[in-house]
Image (cartoon, rainbow, N blue to C red; front, side, top):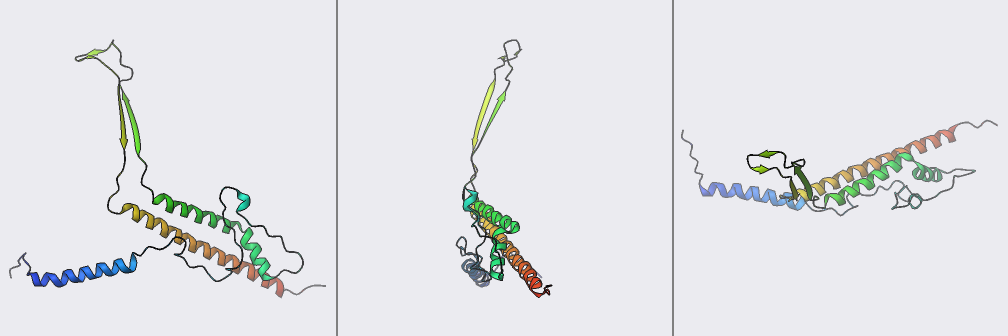
Length: 195
């Protein structure tokens, strides 16, 4: 049996069409850009309750104030207070803000690099070689990395997916706070009161 490197044109056309169709389908379905902040849908559980949001420059603007309840405490009051004052959720909120900053940083080109090299700094007229006086030499280099092949866009997509994962982690922690507060309040309500 003899194998030939030449493949008839009519056999290559269907293979190329299949590859082209698959590539176009993957581009149309998977590479659509997702708007920032809309990739993770908001959860309906406790959507109307205030949560800790990291502020801009002042820490006072970041946390809405809520008074500690006195008297009869409802589940809604307990959940609102727990969501606002939970240090675990505050840490997740700051992590989300850091991941959003990484998205902004990933969209920027790399910084230029400058380097300097000084040689024969201690040279003087006492040391003479075959070529004469040793003189100090200074070399200054300026470099700029030029990214090719969509590396910046890939880095930005990676940062967005990292933010999405952090958002889901935040949602899991928020639901965990809901569960703990609800179960503790339910256990407290089910305890017999001693009078």
